[in-house]
Length: 149
Image 1 (spheres, rainbow, N blue to C red):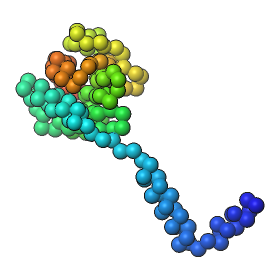
Image 2: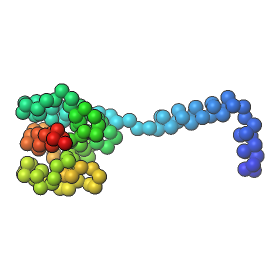
Image 3: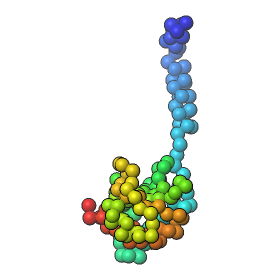
Image 4: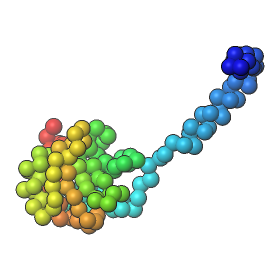
């Protein structure tokens, strides 16, 4: 029985096999999820950009990169991220590359903890995107640290 199926497959013409492959590729493409950048994420980016610009930082190369699970604020290239925003969760938070103790000093009114392994060093929880305005010192410190390295 299994052998018969293989014989049928091997007897197909090359064009028929290509058609099957193209259909499988189309099915896989349909199933791939693409990140959707929300208004909230764009607002967060604008807040960060405005904070940095109003504090004399060069924001010429500031950009963002959205992923399925988080939103990166970057300088030039994706590996130069300095804030990672998780706004689509019950507990909104940002991940930074700064030490958790320093972040606690910079954000004394926010809940701060170690970030998950492999994803920065510290995590700061907040209620809404406007709370980022209260993290001005943190945002500047994250950007400055990136520029030093």
